[in-house]
Amino acid sequence: MFASDEAWRAGHRAAVLPLVCSAAVNIVLAVLALTVLPPTPRSVLLWVALIVLLAGTIIGAIVGARAANGIPVA
Image (tube, rainbow, N blue to C red):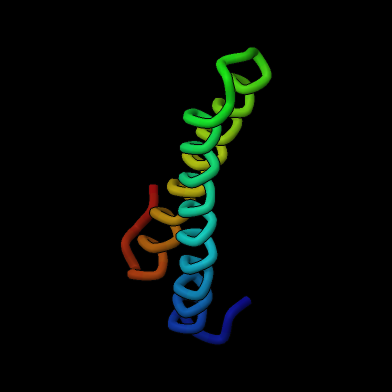
């Protein structure tokens, strides 16, 4: 699919920055959900959703960074 392994790695490096920015936004939203909203069932569900989204973003960033650096991802 790619002309070279280096082109494939460059694509993964380019994908890491948006993931890191998304993780930062998710952290801010999670902190706001924990501190600003009163403890209602809706805010708890929002908090859980944000934590799951944050975890997925961080895992994606780690996997993308490892792939970009040529580290095997199992």
